[in-house]
Image (cartoon, rainbow, N blue to C red; front, side, top):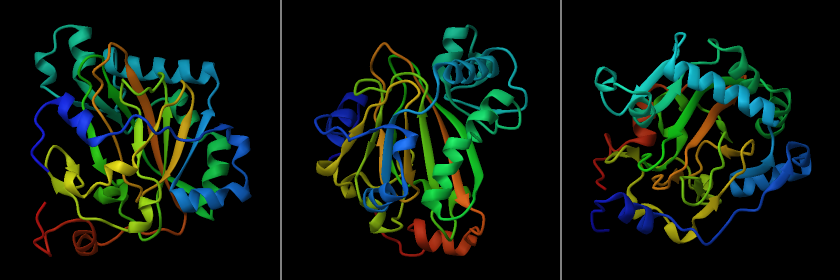
Length: 275
């Protein structure tokens, strides 16, 4: 595949917008029988999971961390924070807020939402343990792409048992502002080497873009996905915000991979394979 240079080229060539995922109305619809769909597809999507008040509380908490007091949470910027002089500049530059669950009760309530934990236990087959919390932000007119990847290829999520992610839309996540895209069933491919290109990602040429399914969600909707599912989000080139929460859970008995096993499984360090 020829090198892609502009956000528009990347969005046009690496993502499809004509295939939309089926969604359930609420978390109550994800029953034991529906777990078979998760095992087959690698994901389930729900239109209504959080109440509007829960969404407002989460947004308020994140905005306070970005603009007022991080409270000990970690903020990731696309440029030095010292160069950001206005709130608009600051919002444009914040890509991620993480390690916030123990810093704000409003966000902690979402991470430990009883309905979400119940579905995690159903899909993981044992009581879940929260292992990562983050907010992923795409500001208007330039929110960056998250290239195709598998979450378990990030060292902190490399476990010997499946990780399950929960991605929650705080704003409407639509086709034009960076909603989630997935390759259904791709978790069955197993661990795939990642490369440092635009990010830590799958090789563009190895992604079956023709199978891409988009998952637009209303505010308060969510998707649950297997840690080996191949997924990504294109640039936000619209005038709308796209803010989302993401949590990862593992079963209580899961153990981290050793550094050597992680390298063998998710990188090209030992094989020398090139993208």
